[in-house]
Amino acid sequence: MSGTAAGVPATRSGADVRSALRRVTDILAVAARDHRDAVAVRDGHREWTYGELWDRTRDTASRLRARGVRPGDRVLLSLPNGPEFVVLFWAALRLGAVVVPVSPEVSAPQMRHIVRDCAPVLCVVARDEDGGPGPEFTAPETGAETDAGAGHGTRVIEPAALWETATGPEQSMDAAQGAETIPPDAPVDGPAPVSPRDPALLIYTSGSTAHPKGVVCPHERIVFAATAIAERLDYRRTDTVFCRLPFSFDYGLYQILLAALAGAALAVPRQRSEIETLRLIRECGATVVPLVPTLATALTRLAARDRRPTAVRRFTNTGAELTAEHTRRLRAAFPGADIVLMYGMTECKRVTIAGPDDDLRRPGTVGTALTGTEVTVVDAAGRPVPPGVTGEIVVRGPHVMDGYWNAPEASAERFRRDPVSGAVALHTGDFGRLDEDGRLVVEGRRDDIFKRRGVRVSVAEIEAAALSVPGVVEAAVAPDVPGAGLVLWYAGDVAPDALPAELAARLDPARRPDRWVRVPELPRTPHGKTDRRRLVRSLTDAASGPATTAPTARTAPAPATARTAPAPPTPRTGAAARTEPTANTARTADTAPPRGNHD
Image (tube, rainbow, N blue to C red; front, side):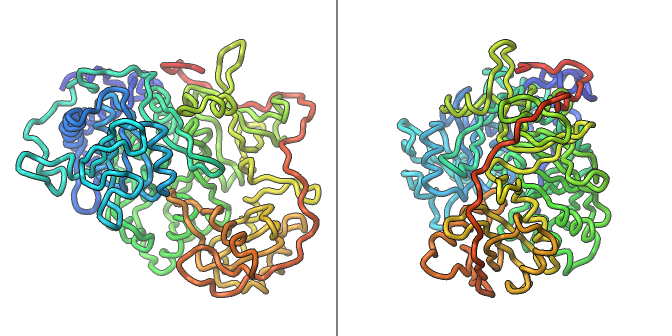
């Protein structure tokens, strides 16, 4: 085979690989060249090699082109995890289109906002429970054309319609696949190549305080981030990566890229219930499992009932932080696996990564900055603070994305350009501190840190204390709930009247909840995180009566116990300004200058 596949030099290590990959599609081209016969994706019913995936994406790209998709157009994918998503993801990118991944579980108003905002030329959507594309799309027939709220012609189709043949619709891609085998040496982007600086993804944030905002992710920034993460996570060609996290969540989406960079298999189970998770992990031989706390909780509960060993060697975590109690339970349930803790956000993908089981040696750490990037902690005036001092986390490097789509004011607030150097600094809005060795400890999101009785309090530390109570399975905290104060929701078999003594033994008075509510289980967002907004609404909506349940399908087994709230908490503040004898900045040197923008 040629030494240059798709124009990509045959280099395989460190900065050489990073400099060789210029577009996201180069990742698949190299995987198809170097790991052509290795399994790329499986769903429990079928599996495709990287060579087969390359061919299928070429065929699907031609079908997308026939539907009017051109370079720069947005293609919205609202599909459950599965091989269809993976093929469409790569195919759209090969055309030079911009992929917009959206959860099928988002509300109709959110979907309408996203469609209006990004104006996709094509929406590929899954059927809803009523058998159609969903009420947010105004064309009920498969493939019918509609403005879909975008103000111009937007086609809304189901995956089966895309792969229909001259003899009629097919049930899957398999029958639609042409006989031609496309070599990986063929041009990655076909006749319409895109610049590395062009957008590849629009990833919409959760919209916890307003409408979701689309983060503009150029090819070169994604490639830098993915290769820098791969360098630290050490996925192997022999790995099977089990992705239960939705592809609409960038943590889940990047598993497609990380698996391809390693030539590993990506397992995308078609499951609706977490009850099946452990069984599926065993059946597919999963060795790497990315997770968030809710999935960690489900796995440890399932493992308590079925203690047979698994092949899992590594758990990774970001998106929502695992507490010390989560990691303790995971290690007890999966003694052969290590845990890698990370911290990041969609606006730069990843900020820091810890070493395997580094939290055992350095409790609270989420690791050091990615190679070639910089993390700084600053005070309220934007000045660097010394090691050990809490402040806002600021990130610089080639992984910082290009701002928000159609939102210049929000972009200017979060992505701040230095007037002299022109470099962009991402102000995360999260608070933490660096140690002398550049390891970051995240103390909480801006809304998760507050002052109470003169004490800086973190939601995470209260949740961690609650989880350490024997019998508590899940916990979530919200401060300043109207009419209730600091509230703790928990699931488990601890009676509400027994909880105060347990918390008093673990928390000082400033950190003790005013009210605690026992629920059968905590509600989830479409990304699998705890849905605190729904929990808060469960109290505010029931303000006229006792709050005994969270918005779940079952009735809480015990009523809530309310206590008299102390004086209202003082307003939240940022990190206090201090004299800075040294700059609290963590920088990791690269072995060679990365390609592309350095802003």
